[in-house]
Image 1 (cartoon, rainbow, N blue to C red):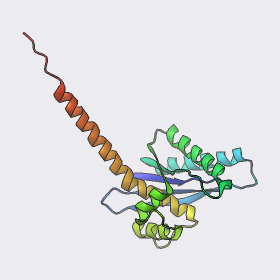
Image 2: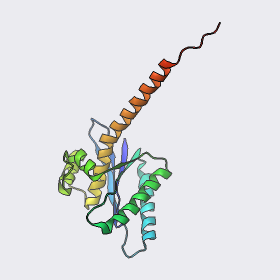
Image 3: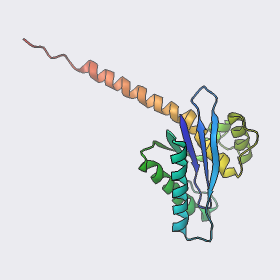
Length: 184
């Protein structure tokens, strides 16, 4: 499974692509940051993010997209820009028909480090270890995007398998309830 992780932000939107599956080593395909200038109008910045994300999807052809779920932080000045960038990420992926998952920061921290309250340094160190990288991707937005992709490979694919198993069990139960039509 190839997952594009997106850490939304209006100034820096982290992007990272990971290949792998549960129980197998994961590998980083690419990582980076889409940057916009605070001097530009918000609408132009959002278009830059849209074009950048579209290019990443076109180049890397992910099977799924994982976006960090926006939450209210103590620094409320960044919430609006983060939410706007998140919306752009969702639209770009949905337009291409890609499955989208949203993961909370604490969910990502717990999946990657085992601690939902881990700091950025701990998450970054685990990203380096999990993906067998020589150094932590910079800035932190890039490492966070990889952590989102890792989380989705590990948790998202497990959720998908559970959903498929439930659907299969329901279909089998439904088929067993039907009585065969007898002809005379």
